[in-house]
Length: 83
Image (tube, rainbow, N blue to C red; front, top):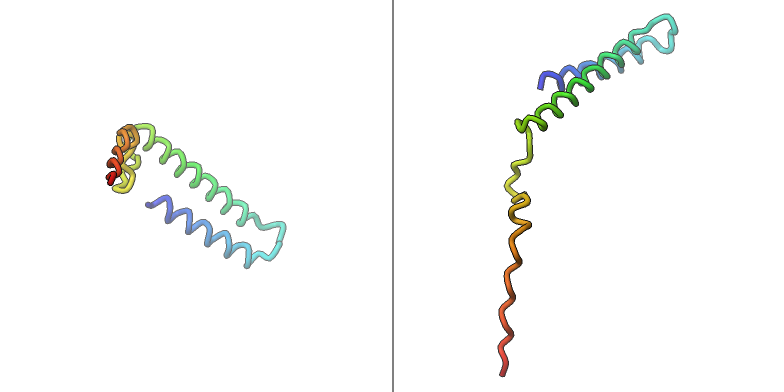
């Protein structure tokens, strides 16, 4: 959660620097903000990959029964009544 807040803060500061500097080539604050945002995004992606690889993150959705439900044979249809 902290990484997400830091990413948003970096995005807002980058927008601020873009508006304030207005193309001044001597100021590198926008590029530094982009570098910080890129490093935070890579860190967040690595943390997610680590969580999935160790099994701490996964899908436990109530609507997704998983592969066990897909292996069950379908229920047979009732025979049609003949007159």
